[in-house]
Length: 149
Image 1 (cartoon, rainbow, N blue to C red):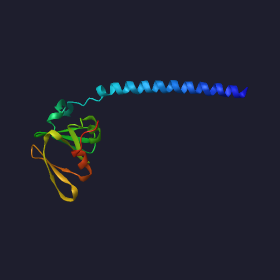
Image 2 (cartoon, one colour):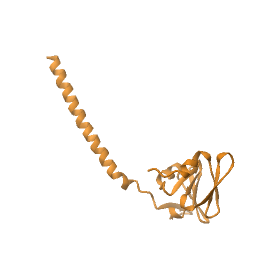
Image 3 (cartoon, rainbow, N blue to C red):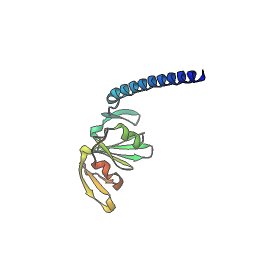
Image 4 (cartoon, rainbow, N blue to C red):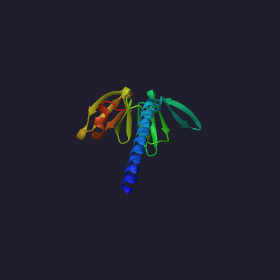
């Protein structure tokens, strides 16, 4: 009698596990189908300065530097301060366009004019505006490698 109950419980457990596995696979498939739409990168960043708010196009940003819990967006002659961390902004921005080159800097790849070697494996990234930003050896592969989604 106990053996029959045990076999019945095992069969029921296997059926419930198979149903849960099928539901989990359906959820994963749905999440994968929705992912490209949810993974859009912003074309503009909201900047609040002097009591007013305005947008800065990401295409206009040459490079971004960290300043504790703020970042400074260098766009042409202007420098805008935004309250966010560099790591948070790096995740939001398009990896095809922006790459991390040191612990404290991201650059717009469209604005990079050249990369010159420096001491001990470091390098200097020269931007179209003439700005020079240090590329640390730790992030060298990140700059030169193709983007991964």
